[in-house]
Length: 104
Image (cartoon, rainbow, N blue to C red; front, side, top):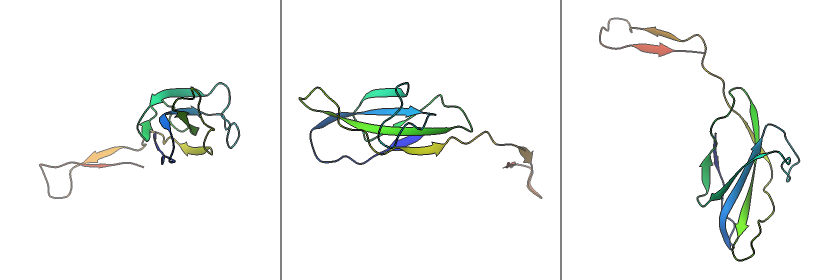
């Protein structure tokens, strides 16, 4: 699941990204939410997620010199798609050197 955000002008030195299958509140993730820290880019990829599951994500800035983090962003969510079904491989009509892959 790719997550990206826009930096608000200020003294952020990095970002904390928390994610969970529990929706928490709009601006407060649940206490057991997974956390990624030390992220210095404005995007990250969340991996090892369950297919067909909705994940909720919050981002907060780590503040330079304060040793604290700012407030969390508004919660966003996304469904991690499940694996394709009904996978079919067949040669296109009149072709011997190609294969067509289709799924639903």
